[in-house]
Figure 1 (cartoon, rainbow, N blue to C red):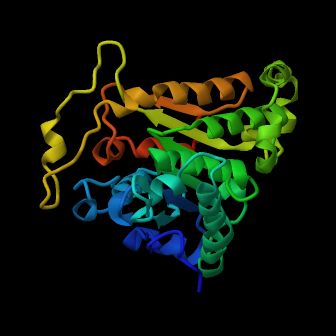
Figure 2: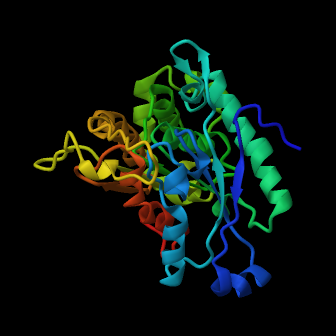
Length: 317
């Protein structure tokens, strides 16, 4: 048995597409995708009625449609990781600490649990494809940051990441910069690598000549599949203060906070990560959804984009 000391529950959702999937189930192996989310219920990824907002990512429906339309070869095994409940201390949510910045002990412990306990548990019990090219993490909000940290900390395990409306913090941005400059690095030495920012920036300009070598280095972000998106304001498209459709929910709460300001507020840190990736010549996929809110209903409307990027027959970019 594995310890669930960092999460209240681990729910394994084994996605099977009924009759159409029988031949694949009998003969194939499945890539796993680990969903790391800043929400209170693991079922938010597939079941509207159990989500605290009354909306979910509707991932099962998305994977079903993509498979039926021959846009993905084999639907992945989805491992859903709910965030922890409760407070570490008054005013400090445990989930915020677990999905916190790169240098925080709680976020380090969370990443260690996912990579060194949960992932081996899945490998030992399901017929999954091994290797970082077959394993991805996907998360929203702070869960997007936690997912990117898994790729940074455990590049030998995770080869793909999707960050929807991510909340990137300073240490995570710094780790991305260090990685693209050094072509993979020891997370314990991040501070040492970043003491002289001018040296890092001067090194970055010399990366293009060695891109092919970096693509073959599993520790480098050049070798990873990276998807980032967000909503928020853009030009004339503004996030509405109130969206009545957010409140036609599948539970009895009739309450789905739209966080109308949050994706716009998070834009500068997303731009910082993109700048670091661009500076280092790292290929990635970025999509902007003008006017989109920061909630499950908005993410459900575009969940197909990260899934196609990670597992589509023609991967992006």
